[in-house]
Picture 1 (tube, one colour):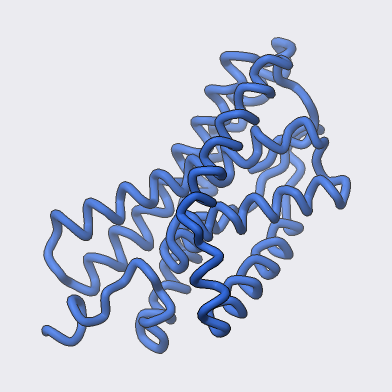
Picture 2 (cartoon, rainbow, N blue to C red; picture 1 turned 90 degrees about the horizontal axis):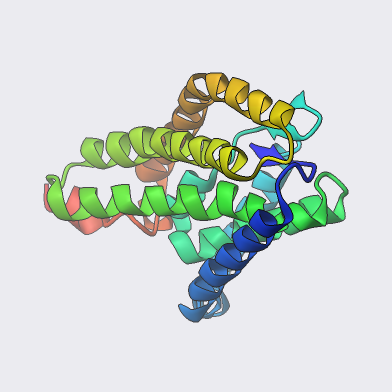
Length: 223
């Protein structure tokens, strides 16, 4: 989901922009570009994934004038590349949406927060729980991280958007429409979970080394 028109109070736009800038800056402090420079294959995969996700973002439903619904793929990018590179991808895609005129530039911070920071954080937390608390089982990783994690990330991102509208909507009608949008979340969650889980299944079978959050020695070689 993406907010396409400024329907939030100015102070909230600035606050979301600062939070997004801080988190992206934290991601940059991890120096994710070093891995890209050192590994040409990873560089190609990351660039290709970013472009493909940007193209998929063009397949969107215009719910109301200020809101568009689309799959985010943030959970998938986070599982494949880890959070720093995933956030760079989502930020680049949102900047591209601004340049293409799909969204207004003051909403860049809000959309990075909703489509990038929040789902990446949720996916990262789920992955950490699976990595540290659950058995080293391929199907556990796939279903909990791939299916459940992506569905949960979509839910929390949608609720974050509704929460932002509840806090700083510029008019009552926009808030009402946001609450109506919340009814579509149960439809978006299975779609995001199915696509993420399906693509993760393919990668884990044919190219497990491409998934940065997956330790093939723990989950495959030791079985």
